[in-house]
Amino acid sequence: MAKSAEMTWLDAIEAEQSGDRATALDAAKKTVAIDPAHADAWMGVARWSLPVETRGRQEMPDLKQSAKAMAALRRAVQIDPENFDAWRLGGVLLVDHLGMLEDGLKWWQDRREVAPYEVAPLIEQIAILVRLGHYEECAVLLEELFSEGMEATNSKQLTRMESVSRMVSRAAKMEEDEIFRPQNPKHPRWAIIEKMKKRKPISPTFFLITFIAPIVFLLGTISMAFVGDSTWGFILVFVFILVCFMAISRVTSGLLHKLNRHALDLDRAIDFETSSGRVCIPETVRYSKLYAAMVGQRMPALGERLELLVQSGDKLPIRWSPDIPEFSAFEEDWFTETREKIEADELESLED
Image (tube, rainbow, N blue to C red; front, side):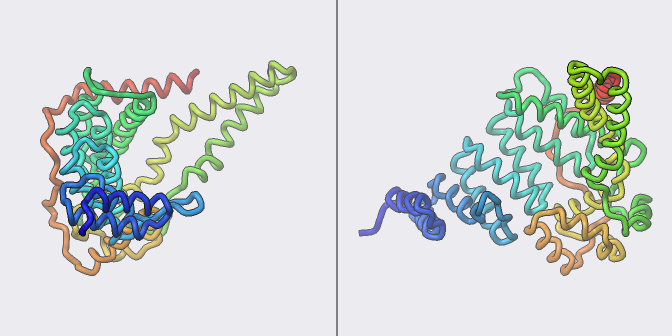
Protein backbone atom coordinates (compact mmCIF):
# COMPACT_ATOMS: atom_id res chain seq x y z
CA MET A 1 0.00 0.00 0.00
CA ALA A 2 1.35 3.44 -0.95
CA LYS A 3 2.12 5.77 1.93
CA SER A 4 0.08 8.89 2.51
CA ALA A 5 1.62 12.34 2.28
CA GLU A 6 1.65 12.71 6.07
CA MET A 7 3.36 9.36 6.62
CA THR A 8 5.99 10.21 4.00
CA TRP A 9 6.49 13.59 5.65
CA LEU A 10 7.04 11.91 9.01
CA ASP A 11 9.75 9.81 7.34
CA ALA A 12 11.39 13.04 6.18
CA ILE A 13 11.33 14.50 9.69
CA GLU A 14 12.80 11.34 11.20
CA ALA A 15 15.56 11.27 8.60
CA GLU A 16 16.39 14.91 9.28
CA GLN A 17 16.51 14.32 13.03
CA SER A 18 18.93 11.46 12.51
CA GLY A 19 21.18 13.67 10.40
CA ASP A 20 20.37 12.06 7.03
CA ARG A 21 19.47 15.14 5.01
CA ALA A 22 19.65 13.36 1.65
CA THR A 23 16.95 10.89 2.72
CA ALA A 24 14.95 13.74 4.28
CA LEU A 25 15.09 15.70 1.03
CA ASP A 26 14.04 12.66 -0.98
CA ALA A 27 11.10 12.02 1.37
CA ALA A 28 10.06 15.68 1.22
CA LYS A 29 10.04 15.55 -2.59
CA LYS A 30 7.90 12.42 -2.47
CA THR A 31 5.54 14.21 -0.06
CA VAL A 32 4.92 17.14 -2.41
CA ALA A 33 4.52 14.70 -5.30
CA ILE A 34 1.70 13.04 -3.38
CA ASP A 35 0.27 16.29 -2.01
CA PRO A 36 1.36 19.41 -3.95
CA ALA A 37 -0.37 21.59 -1.32
CA HIS A 38 1.83 20.39 1.57
CA ALA A 39 3.44 23.67 2.67
CA ASP A 40 5.72 22.12 5.32
CA ALA A 41 7.12 19.66 2.80
CA TRP A 42 7.87 22.45 0.32
CA MET A 43 9.68 24.27 3.13
CA GLY A 44 11.60 21.07 3.83
CA VAL A 45 12.60 20.79 0.17
CA ALA A 46 13.89 24.36 0.31
CA ARG A 47 15.88 23.95 3.54
CA TRP A 48 17.34 20.55 2.70
CA SER A 49 18.35 21.66 -0.79
CA LEU A 50 20.79 24.07 0.87
CA PRO A 51 24.14 23.10 2.42
CA VAL A 52 24.16 22.05 6.04
CA GLU A 53 26.11 23.93 8.69
CA THR A 54 29.38 22.13 9.44
CA ARG A 55 31.57 22.75 12.49
CA GLY A 56 29.62 25.88 13.33
CA ARG A 57 30.22 27.38 9.89
CA GLN A 58 27.59 27.73 7.19
CA GLU A 59 28.68 26.67 3.72
CA MET A 60 27.19 28.93 1.06
CA PRO A 61 24.92 27.37 -1.60
CA ASP A 62 25.87 27.34 -5.27
CA LEU A 63 23.64 28.58 -8.10
CA LYS A 64 21.83 25.26 -8.61
CA GLN A 65 21.10 24.81 -4.91
CA SER A 66 19.88 28.40 -4.54
CA ALA A 67 17.58 28.12 -7.56
CA LYS A 68 16.05 24.83 -6.37
CA ALA A 69 15.46 26.19 -2.87
CA MET A 70 13.92 29.37 -4.26
CA ALA A 71 11.51 27.42 -6.46
CA ALA A 72 10.34 25.44 -3.43
CA LEU A 73 9.95 28.59 -1.33
CA ARG A 74 7.72 30.17 -3.95
CA ARG A 75 5.39 27.19 -3.62
CA ALA A 76 5.60 27.31 0.18
CA VAL A 77 4.48 30.96 0.46
CA GLN A 78 1.82 30.45 -2.19
CA ILE A 79 0.24 27.73 -0.04
CA ASP A 80 1.00 29.27 3.36
CA PRO A 81 1.53 33.05 2.99
CA GLU A 82 1.72 33.46 6.78
CA ASN A 83 5.03 31.55 6.97
CA PHE A 84 7.48 34.41 7.57
CA ASP A 85 10.49 32.08 7.73
CA ALA A 86 9.85 31.14 4.10
CA TRP A 87 9.60 34.80 3.10
CA ARG A 88 12.80 35.66 4.99
CA LEU A 89 14.82 32.81 3.47
CA GLY A 90 13.47 33.61 0.01
CA GLY A 91 14.47 37.26 0.36
CA VAL A 92 18.02 36.29 1.32
CA LEU A 93 18.35 33.88 -1.60
CA LEU A 94 16.93 36.32 -4.16
CA VAL A 95 18.99 39.35 -3.13
CA ASP A 96 22.22 38.06 -1.60
CA HIS A 97 22.75 34.76 -3.41
CA LEU A 98 21.10 35.29 -6.80
CA GLY A 99 21.46 39.06 -7.07
CA MET A 100 17.89 39.44 -8.35
CA LEU A 101 17.11 42.77 -6.69
CA GLU A 102 14.16 43.54 -8.94
CA ASP A 103 12.58 40.20 -8.02
CA GLY A 104 13.44 40.90 -4.38
CA LEU A 105 11.37 44.09 -4.45
CA LYS A 106 8.41 42.17 -5.86
CA TRP A 107 8.92 39.34 -3.34
CA TRP A 108 8.69 41.68 -0.35
CA GLN A 109 5.82 43.61 -1.94
CA ASP A 110 3.88 40.34 -2.07
CA ARG A 111 4.64 39.84 1.63
CA ARG A 112 3.32 43.35 2.37
CA GLU A 113 -0.01 42.36 0.85
CA VAL A 114 -0.18 39.54 3.40
CA ALA A 115 1.11 41.58 6.36
CA PRO A 116 0.64 45.30 5.56
CA TYR A 117 1.75 46.50 9.02
CA GLU A 118 4.91 44.42 9.26
CA VAL A 119 8.15 46.44 9.28
CA ALA A 120 10.52 43.75 7.94
CA PRO A 121 9.32 43.91 4.28
CA LEU A 122 9.64 47.69 4.26
CA ILE A 123 13.16 47.54 5.68
CA GLU A 124 14.20 44.99 3.06
CA GLN A 125 12.69 47.03 0.21
CA ILE A 126 14.45 50.19 1.40
CA ALA A 127 17.80 48.37 1.53
CA ILE A 128 17.29 47.16 -2.06
CA LEU A 129 16.29 50.61 -3.33
CA VAL A 130 19.40 52.16 -1.77
CA ARG A 131 21.56 49.70 -3.69
CA LEU A 132 19.75 50.66 -6.91
CA GLY A 133 20.08 54.40 -6.20
CA HIS A 134 16.34 55.13 -6.02
CA TYR A 135 16.33 57.47 -3.04
CA GLU A 136 12.98 59.14 -3.67
CA GLU A 137 11.20 55.82 -3.34
CA CYS A 138 13.26 55.13 -0.21
CA ALA A 139 11.94 58.33 1.34
CA VAL A 140 8.35 57.29 0.66
CA LEU A 141 8.89 53.94 2.33
CA LEU A 142 10.71 55.54 5.27
CA GLU A 143 7.69 57.74 5.90
CA GLU A 144 5.49 54.67 5.91
CA LEU A 145 7.98 52.74 8.06
CA PHE A 146 7.79 55.31 10.87
CA SER A 147 4.06 55.94 10.56
CA GLU A 148 1.56 55.01 13.25
CA GLY A 149 0.26 51.49 13.16
CA MET A 150 3.42 49.78 11.92
CA GLU A 151 4.36 46.75 14.01
CA ALA A 152 7.86 47.08 15.49
CA THR A 153 7.71 44.09 17.81
CA ASN A 154 11.10 44.24 19.50
CA SER A 155 14.11 46.46 20.19
CA LYS A 156 16.13 44.78 17.44
CA GLN A 157 13.60 45.85 14.82
CA LEU A 158 13.50 49.40 16.22
CA THR A 159 17.29 49.59 16.03
CA ARG A 160 17.26 48.34 12.46
CA MET A 161 14.62 50.90 11.53
CA GLU A 162 16.86 53.71 12.76
CA SER A 163 19.86 52.13 11.04
CA VAL A 164 18.16 51.90 7.66
CA SER A 165 17.04 55.52 7.99
CA ARG A 166 20.64 56.65 8.49
CA MET A 167 21.76 54.43 5.63
CA VAL A 168 19.38 56.16 3.23
CA SER A 169 20.41 59.62 4.42
CA ARG A 170 24.14 58.95 4.04
CA ALA A 171 23.81 57.28 0.66
CA ALA A 172 21.62 60.09 -0.69
CA LYS A 173 24.02 62.71 0.65
CA MET A 174 27.00 60.97 -1.00
CA GLU A 175 25.18 61.08 -4.36
CA GLU A 176 23.33 64.35 -3.93
CA ASP A 177 25.19 65.90 -6.89
CA GLU A 178 25.27 62.86 -9.14
CA ILE A 179 23.45 59.52 -8.87
CA PHE A 180 25.33 56.77 -10.70
CA ARG A 181 23.31 55.03 -13.42
CA PRO A 182 25.43 52.10 -14.67
CA GLN A 183 23.26 51.46 -17.73
CA ASN A 184 24.61 54.69 -19.25
CA PRO A 185 28.07 53.87 -20.72
CA LYS A 186 28.86 57.61 -20.97
CA HIS A 187 28.10 58.38 -17.34
CA PRO A 188 31.03 60.36 -15.84
CA ARG A 189 31.39 57.94 -12.95
CA TRP A 190 32.61 55.26 -15.37
CA ALA A 191 35.68 57.40 -16.11
CA ILE A 192 36.46 57.59 -12.39
CA ILE A 193 36.01 53.85 -11.96
CA GLU A 194 38.33 53.31 -14.92
CA LYS A 195 41.02 55.47 -13.30
CA MET A 196 40.72 53.67 -9.95
CA LYS A 197 40.22 50.13 -11.21
CA LYS A 198 43.56 49.04 -9.71
CA ARG A 199 42.61 50.28 -6.26
CA LYS A 200 40.74 47.94 -3.92
CA PRO A 201 38.18 49.41 -1.51
CA ILE A 202 39.41 50.45 1.93
CA SER A 203 38.24 47.89 4.48
CA PRO A 204 36.52 49.08 7.70
CA THR A 205 39.30 47.41 9.72
CA PHE A 206 42.04 49.26 7.86
CA PHE A 207 40.12 52.54 8.22
CA LEU A 208 39.73 51.87 11.93
CA ILE A 209 43.44 51.22 12.46
CA THR A 210 44.80 54.04 10.32
CA PHE A 211 42.27 56.80 10.99
CA ILE A 212 39.93 56.30 13.95
CA ALA A 213 42.34 54.55 16.34
CA PRO A 214 45.05 57.29 16.18
CA ILE A 215 42.48 60.01 16.92
CA VAL A 216 41.03 58.08 19.85
CA PHE A 217 44.54 57.29 21.13
CA LEU A 218 45.49 60.99 20.99
CA LEU A 219 42.34 62.06 22.85
CA GLY A 220 42.88 59.31 25.42
CA THR A 221 46.49 60.33 26.00
CA ILE A 222 45.52 63.98 26.53
CA SER A 223 42.72 63.05 28.94
CA MET A 224 45.06 60.74 30.91
CA ALA A 225 47.46 63.63 31.41
CA PHE A 226 44.73 65.69 33.05
CA VAL A 227 42.58 63.27 35.08
CA GLY A 228 44.23 59.85 34.86
CA ASP A 229 46.24 60.01 38.09
CA SER A 230 43.59 58.26 40.22
CA THR A 231 41.35 55.22 40.08
CA TRP A 232 38.26 57.28 39.35
CA GLY A 233 40.23 59.31 36.85
CA PHE A 234 41.31 56.15 35.05
CA ILE A 235 37.70 54.94 34.89
CA LEU A 236 36.57 58.32 33.60
CA VAL A 237 39.24 58.25 30.88
CA PHE A 238 38.21 54.72 29.89
CA VAL A 239 34.57 55.80 29.52
CA PHE A 240 35.66 58.89 27.62
CA ILE A 241 37.73 56.81 25.17
CA LEU A 242 34.82 54.41 24.65
CA VAL A 243 32.40 57.26 23.93
CA CYS A 244 34.90 58.92 21.57
CA PHE A 245 35.41 55.68 19.69
CA MET A 246 31.68 55.11 19.14
CA ALA A 247 30.99 58.76 18.24
CA ILE A 248 33.90 59.10 15.81
CA SER A 249 33.12 55.74 14.19
CA ARG A 250 29.54 56.80 13.65
CA VAL A 251 30.34 60.26 12.26
CA THR A 252 33.20 59.15 9.99
CA SER A 253 31.30 56.26 8.39
CA GLY A 254 30.24 58.70 5.67
CA LEU A 255 33.89 59.52 4.99
CA LEU A 256 34.68 55.84 4.47
CA HIS A 257 31.83 55.60 1.97
CA LYS A 258 33.17 58.61 0.06
CA LEU A 259 36.65 57.11 -0.07
CA ASN A 260 35.12 53.90 -1.41
CA ARG A 261 32.74 55.64 -3.82
CA HIS A 262 34.38 54.04 -6.87
CA ALA A 263 33.92 50.56 -5.34
CA LEU A 264 30.31 51.25 -4.33
CA ASP A 265 29.57 52.45 -7.86
CA LEU A 266 30.97 49.25 -9.33
CA ASP A 267 28.97 47.28 -6.78
CA ARG A 268 25.81 48.95 -8.12
CA ALA A 269 26.81 48.05 -11.67
CA ILE A 270 27.10 44.42 -10.58
CA ASP A 271 23.62 44.65 -9.02
CA PHE A 272 22.24 46.07 -12.26
CA GLU A 273 23.75 43.20 -14.23
CA THR A 274 22.44 40.46 -11.97
CA SER A 275 19.01 42.13 -11.70
CA SER A 276 18.54 42.70 -15.43
CA GLY A 277 20.33 39.59 -16.71
CA ARG A 278 22.43 41.77 -19.03
CA VAL A 279 25.91 43.28 -18.88
CA CYS A 280 26.99 46.92 -18.62
CA ILE A 281 30.50 46.81 -17.10
CA PRO A 282 33.29 47.64 -19.59
CA GLU A 283 35.75 44.85 -20.35
CA THR A 284 38.67 46.97 -19.10
CA VAL A 285 37.00 47.24 -15.70
CA ARG A 286 35.64 43.69 -15.53
CA TYR A 287 39.09 42.09 -15.44
CA SER A 288 40.58 44.63 -13.02
CA LYS A 289 41.74 44.24 -9.44
CA LEU A 290 38.78 46.30 -8.22
CA TYR A 291 36.23 44.10 -9.99
CA ALA A 292 37.84 40.93 -8.62
CA ALA A 293 37.72 42.39 -5.11
CA MET A 294 34.04 43.33 -5.35
CA VAL A 295 32.95 39.99 -6.84
CA GLY A 296 35.04 38.19 -4.23
CA GLN A 297 32.85 39.73 -1.52
CA ARG A 298 29.68 38.28 -3.10
CA MET A 299 28.09 34.86 -2.67
CA PRO A 300 29.24 31.90 -4.83
CA ALA A 301 25.85 31.58 -6.56
CA LEU A 302 25.93 35.22 -7.62
CA GLY A 303 29.44 34.77 -8.99
CA GLU A 304 28.22 31.85 -11.07
CA ARG A 305 25.34 33.93 -12.44
CA LEU A 306 27.74 36.72 -13.38
CA GLU A 307 29.90 34.32 -15.35
CA LEU A 308 26.86 33.09 -17.29
CA LEU A 309 25.75 36.66 -18.00
CA VAL A 310 29.19 37.63 -19.27
CA GLN A 311 29.23 34.58 -21.53
CA SER A 312 25.83 35.53 -23.02
CA GLY A 313 27.10 39.04 -23.77
CA ASP A 314 23.63 40.66 -23.89
CA LYS A 315 24.06 44.41 -23.42
CA LEU A 316 21.98 46.37 -20.93
CA PRO A 317 19.89 49.01 -22.79
CA ILE A 318 20.66 52.59 -21.83
CA ARG A 319 16.97 53.19 -21.02
CA TRP A 320 16.65 50.14 -18.76
CA SER A 321 15.14 50.77 -15.35
CA PRO A 322 14.22 48.29 -12.62
CA ASP A 323 10.54 47.51 -12.20
CA ILE A 324 9.68 49.17 -8.89
CA PRO A 325 6.29 48.68 -7.20
CA GLU A 326 4.00 51.71 -7.07
CA PHE A 327 4.45 53.71 -3.89
CA SER A 328 2.65 56.83 -2.69
CA ALA A 329 3.74 60.34 -3.62
CA PHE A 330 7.25 61.46 -2.65
CA GLU A 331 7.47 63.83 0.30
CA GLU A 332 10.61 65.88 -0.43
CA ASP A 333 10.31 68.19 2.56
CA TRP A 334 9.94 65.24 4.91
CA PHE A 335 13.04 63.53 3.47
CA THR A 336 15.14 66.71 3.75
CA GLU A 337 14.06 67.24 7.36
CA THR A 338 14.83 63.61 8.20
CA ARG A 339 18.32 63.80 6.73
CA GLU A 340 19.06 67.10 8.50
CA LYS A 341 17.86 65.63 11.79
CA ILE A 342 20.14 62.60 11.42
CA GLU A 343 23.14 64.82 10.61
CA ALA A 344 22.35 67.04 13.61
CA ASP A 345 22.16 63.98 15.90
CA GLU A 346 25.56 62.82 14.65
CA LEU A 347 27.15 66.22 15.35
CA GLU A 348 25.55 66.36 18.78
CA SER A 349 26.86 62.88 19.66
CA LEU A 350 30.36 63.94 18.63
CA GLU A 351 30.20 67.07 20.77
CA ASP A 352 29.02 65.00 23.75
